[in-house]
Length: 221
Image 1 (cartoon, rainbow, N blue to C red):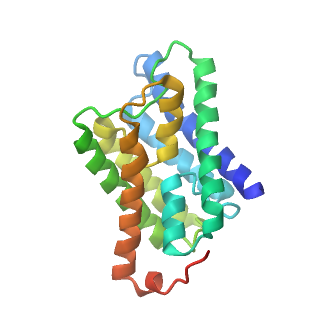
Image 2 (cartoon, rainbow, N blue to C red; image 1 turned 135 degrees about the horizontal axis):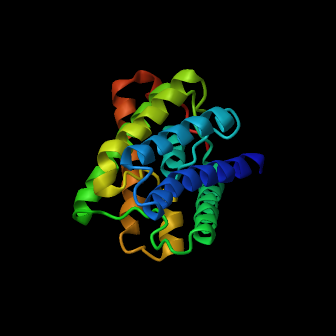
């Protein structure tokens, strides 16, 4: 239960700070700026990894949890509770922002600026890159250490910087779930629930192909 609560809290902080930056940028007529939003996402991920990485693994992302379970480095019995905790944390964060900024309609929702397929492919590729890095710098399902934190946070900030204007650069079903449900803008939520999972699973397959250590990991049930 402590791990589940830790994931809930970590995801709450991620969504509150990340989507909060988007909301505050909108209500203050762009004072945060797009680079500022991207930096916020990167920095909050860095802080969360250092804070809870050795406790729950700092997944704070259902796609990451599913990928670790598929890789065999995370017990599958914890997958559903982790995802439930992550989604709950995201909903709570969006709820907090809705109470604070009731005039804001989107609450930082990820909405494609182009076609749905364009954002779907982009989100899958972005999450593939993120998960590829996570798998190669983490220890099992634990994200800890200076290298892991900096590498993962850098990828999040980098991808948010260049891909945010097109797809929102979610890479995280929970991050998109909370704002979509609380704002009511859920028509394209399916993109952000499915594409990141597909991208993360492709990263697992790729790692097993290029590195023997991944193909030798025993599957936990």
